[in-house]
Length: 480
Image (tube, rainbow, N blue to C red; front, side, top):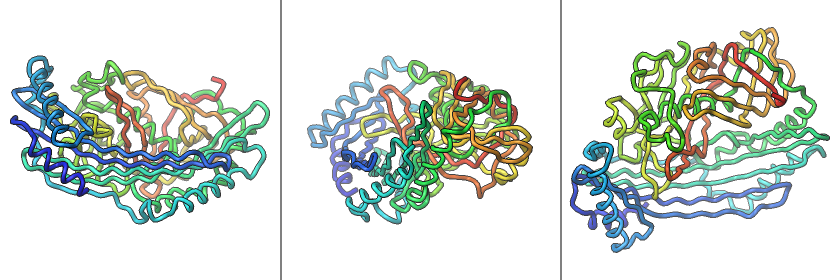
């Protein structure tokens, strides 16, 4: 962080006159390791350092970004920002004076018990080889992969109003995949943290069951080869947390992003079926649906003290007892729309502007155990781990495929079914929510690469959820 402080001083000295400015400095380091079929794959190391400058002047907003952090490089970037501010003042769709000012001074660091460096490269590769070998206990496993990765972002945001926010984000990711084949039938199963993103260090490997998960992953891939296809028709549906992550992400998170509602994304990622007049009255789901924006959950993938505009990040209720209360809108979008929002202006890197993004978007726990949810189903399917997804450009009509399903008959969990899938409409699907797992069944997970924006930005997003029960959902198998 000290190297960012020195650059920040140069930013202050070279900043031009204006109504307000900010400089967001970011240093990012990544390390990716993988073993496939017991063969070590080429490792991938990455390092990036740069600054994103924002200047508000004369009713316009201008941006400049550079990796040339010399005095001359910063001066040139400020000059570009001034040029864009002048252009925006003449042609912009909104008054640049709406841009939020920040004087916040705060710090944040991911909770890390076992740093990435605490394990040698040899030890990491040995761990991956061991996990990969454990996946291959049967000849029907025709492909296997184990991977381990690290991402560390150090960020320093300074503003002309005296704001100074220091944040360090550490992520250690891991995963296993086994591919099984018999004749014309091929099935794959993921585990070991593959769909379980979070902040932290090597301690996360034990939390997600990295090494211990290998046998289960391979056994389930093999068992799916002989399983019947998922039945077709209208049935009750239980989604495990691994699939709830994507259900929340696609049919609650993206529709509630305020810049999308304002039309900013329609040329690329689409609009939303949600409109501004829905907030405060629209029934998004049943009374069991309670959704929060919560940046304070320890270890969740997008936990932070502030967003990239310098707004203090605080927990907010978005949907309460099924009623839509507030969007995922940063302070700039709030000013443009007149609606309340949250601290969710986020950028993927130093060369991108912050836009409205999901951060930690969580389904609050209910009262049921998983056994209780299953016991409430007369005829249904339990589905686990996303395999495919499709949703329309208003984030309304969707279709998801999962890796594994289990039949439920008369309140009892039955055998496996393969290629399970379901479809629905966001505007009505959540109203069929009939049961939500208790706190003990909630899992804090996340998505590493949520894409949005022009130019594209991929950011990590946290989602915590228990299993959930939905009534009368259209389900289908791989042949449909």
